[in-house]
Image (tube, rainbow, N blue to C red; front, top):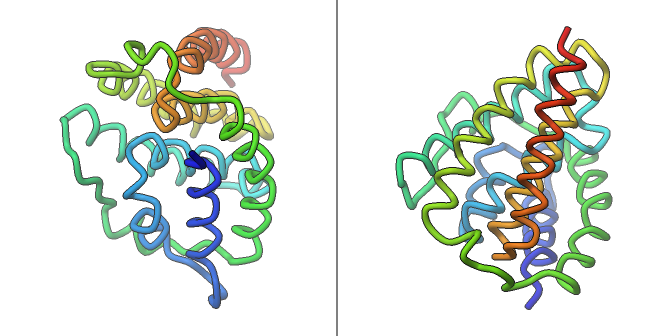
Length: 190
């Protein structure tokens, strides 16, 4: 099983032969991997140097929130509003983000998998969606503190990873990180 590496490869292939890639094309490319990947990848992009560009963390949080609302509503097919789907990401920045994500994906494929799946089975995705919406709401105000938005986005990565890899151990860790993120956001709140 190489789920995480396959997702990173798909992300890399989405940018192949182009100078810029639309967010909608990226979502379409990885959408078949499931809801966890759609939650995880925009949040993981925020943890790379791309997240240091003013406004990008908020746009990425909006993308994640769009997917979280759809999960909460029980949708199977995910979509992006056109104003988000048409946003473009520079190939160089996307390549750099993919390079940063690849070692983590390789590690995840080696060490994670079906453990304590009762923590990731229904209704877990809907409960996670509520937690993710709360985390996304903290991102715009946290942008005034450089890289502070990485706290909630890192937690979203854990939730997405747990759902993607179907690993309840990661889900338990994500809930601990959620509590820590809420505390961290509270202390950093401008």
